[in-house]
Length: 430
Ligand SMILES: NC(=O)c1ccc[n+]([C@@H]2O[C@H](COP(=O)([O-])OP(=O)(O)OC[C@H]3O[C@@H](n4cnc5c(N)ncnc54)[C@H](O)[C@@H]3O)[C@@H](O)[C@H]2O)c1
Ligand SMILES: N[C@H](CO)Cc1c[nH]c[nH+]1
Ligand SMILES: [Zn+2]
Image (cartoon, rainbow, N blue to C red; front, side, top):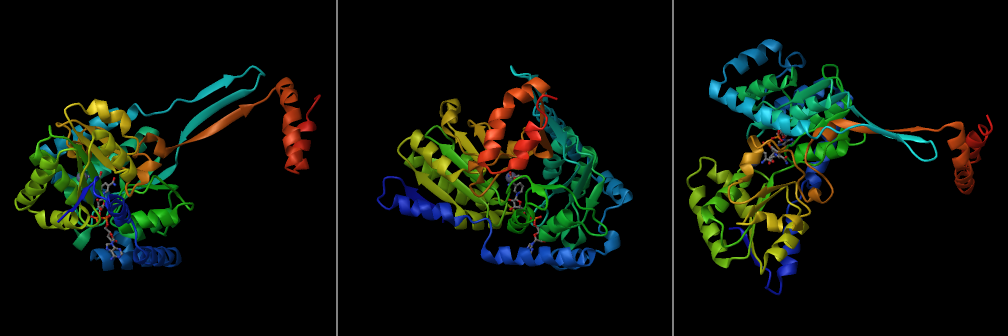
């Protein structure tokens, strides 16, 4: 049973706070397990990666087979039916055209004192993209990671993907082929993140690791941050649907189930102004779960972390959505534009009855790698800028240096850094 809350109940705040705390990206157990795995990979390199991969994925790899060969990629991709390839190509092209619009421009100008100021964008040299593959397989996540990296101009893209029982969905490799990825390793979990961050004999280290994954992957990214860059914490999926009486309960239920089926830690929440809709959606979820092959997994998620919250107004619904800061927020309303400005914290917002979140997972064109676990309060979804960095440019002439010297030397003095002051004053009148 999902949690049922009504904002007029006296204990609402306490129960809502419990709900906010319920979805923890990583428990102490996961933190400890991940720290041990990372330390092991740093110490023993390939040997640890192979051992952990065979233990967690039952994959039967050796250091020699960690990397897919060009022949393996080509023959797996060739097995993919033409309609699947065409669908992946459509997704690729739409993601690419949207992400091309995110490319930032350099700018340089000279201010009134004659100081040249500017910002220059350059790509990260080498990135590791994580494609999840434990409970489900995600060809779409190959594209969501690889396309913005290419658009940014990254020269080396190394992809990792777990192969449970030694198997890979050929569509993963077809997506990689479409996206032009050739360096692919059969590894997942914390050991893959550690190998990318620290490097092994077989897997050269990268500068940044991106991509979604389960709690082990999200925690590993958190732990290697600093050694490498990371995009964000993109852990188990979430959706929050804001609906009023205009919503179709069957459609809302289908969207809640779609996130719950991502498995462990996935969370689906409905916030509605209409008590009758709340009851109808709860009944619909139960009915539809019996129709799905993966209904059991989705039911587990719905029972464990699902919630239906009844509120008095759409403004109140927006306030609750902002406090939860969900990965996805759907506005299942006749006039979604009216509420849009009020939603400030969300990884992605889906407008109106005809925009199910799943269309964004695949072919909408926007990125599905999005911040989870309330990190949308401060983080954004994956995009071209995640694969670039900005360098500032500064240039003084003799006269602009003279004009700025006095305040600069003064500040150096109050910081008691005379060497700084001297490096400025030594140039004056030259
Ligand atoms: N936020 C996003 O943008 C986004 C996008 C797509 C998918 N997702 C999420 O990605 C996740 C994919 O999870 P998944 O499990 O299917 O694949 P995964 O690739 O993330 O994780 C599989 C790996 O987890 C590790 N693992 C599993 N159990 C372990 C244990 N007990 N100890 C140590 N390591 C262990 C193994 O190494 C395994 O290879 C889902 O939670 C889904 O919601 C998020
Ligand atoms: N909803 C997931 C997180 O945004 C992404 C995904 C990929 N495939 C299906 N769903
Ligand atoms: Zn999804």
